[in-house]
View 1 (tube, rainbow, N blue to C red):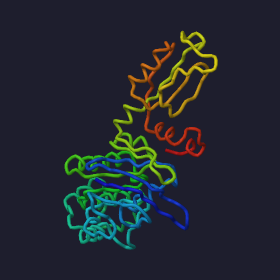
View 2 (view 1 turned 45 degrees about the vertical axis):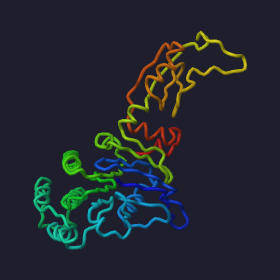
View 3 (view 1 turned 180 degrees about the vertical axis):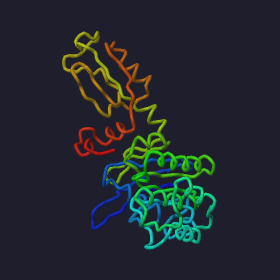
Length: 309
């Protein structure tokens, strides 16, 4: 398990991470999401042992990552911005990775470059952005990592290659128990592949759950009581009647007599609360991870509404 407790980091006096806690279970695919500047890349660089925290702990199965060369050899990292030494061919890169990582699977490397149609004799700097990303996946996945950290991993990849990359990842999770942490703005991809989600804002964790729990506890509903004065209940003159008392409402908007809400409740509990007042309309609507992300961080925030997923 990857465990982060109280992670704090400042840059030039500005707080980038503010006492962040995070738990990534072994063998999971953990999606890290947040707005631009929320701290996702900063977290990944700390997890990779590139940056040292000001406060807090970062552990892999109880081992500290900082200056732990043996542990780092078990971690694969693909950053958003890729770097390849000038003049190196893909074959040269494979030799460099082979010398740096104790477990290197040459058969897998050649298989991946063949499937992705990459010329191992060409200089990597001559590759397109998408080809460079494919080359990096071929290299990193061939180190057979126990932990894989990915920062915007699919940018520049066409849909076919994206599927191939996900297949390699899922096969390693299933066959070897590899643990994956992926940061991405593409929430549709995250919803398909991740089984755990962490949503961060301003350097803090605001929601961390497995995806199944999110889907069973968070619901999008629309409700109408028509003319609320017709509800057969006794209302004190000095007390405003609330037909949703007992619901944990994350977001609510009203369109005419219809209320549209995102709630954090057991569905049967929500049904009981609403049905006791005989609604004329009560529907459960599909809820996407994108909507969870928006409403957890504040649906009225213009910056979030303008975010490109």
